[in-house]
Length: 481
Image (tube, rainbow, N blue to C red; front, side, top):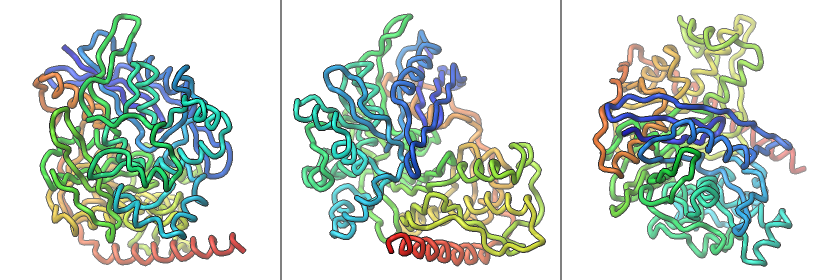
């Protein structure tokens, strides 16, 4: 009997069917709108996401069970009685709450958030977004006074609306800045700090178990897994042991390394302790997380600028690297996440000359994403000692030049997944585990090894990052005059 994973991501919703022999296929994929009401704001229509999720589930009817993975930090508010959304989904990329974050930092609140949630103060996480809703949306305040307000990440909205379970799994809760990482419960002091009433939040539960029943046109199907997307990808890579590490190169890039039963804290390296997964009836498995705000988004931006004409152009890239010609690109188009956590940093090319053309600029963008991944992985290696093969997936890993450059600068073996839907596969494998099903193995990875020494290039990139951060700080100071 087949099982199904619904991958509700930043740009699309996809239904993956996983068969007992390990084979997979996409039953349906639907893109949704990206809404930009003003500078720094990124939103989705919750009703559109919900309709797409249901359409994808209908396309995979007849399955034994369903699992759903979600965007992570994206969140919204809805009426607990009618289950109607009262706000758009505020997407993880949204930076509207930066002023609140700055005030909390100035008040010295970051130490508490790092200690309890394991996260830095950043608008990336859900807490400040949820607080913004309560402060700025009159309907939210009215519903709160009436005891009907519900606040949460998208998974909680989907489940509440579709199965009647107002819950969120522990991995998603760990991305809010409101959950105490040790107790795995909503932390009263964190909720008070951000101004998010704990009674409006969903119950925190393990990543597998009873999430209710989804009613479809062709019958009902149980939902037995719910997890944040990057942790699902970690599971899909087969990362189970401490030290196992993956990077997913999507809109952003997200690295996770399994640390096992213990919380490993590394604030000095900008790494975030998080929960990898928790199966029903079992202890949680922890991980270290390192995020990069801009990965494929930088490549898509370069395409919109006209630097190249579609993916086929990227496939022809070869020859000396851009950095060998002195050209460096820092992909800080939305600031820098791990290990810097600097929203003020700005994207920049350094070393431009009349000799550089569109090919060089394009190569520099790909190299910049690879350099950023190397910063994160190196920080993880320094803290955890994990130096084994690195598993990678995502759209950028279809590019041979990018993969080879990444292997060179990391000086370690790279395993490129041949499974095009690692996030959904990980969710489906959690479903299979929950049902006690034995699933066949995915296709073997493509293995790459370093071919060229590039330690000097890492130093050049580090200097470029320093300059990009300094420029961003100059811009911030000017804006406050």
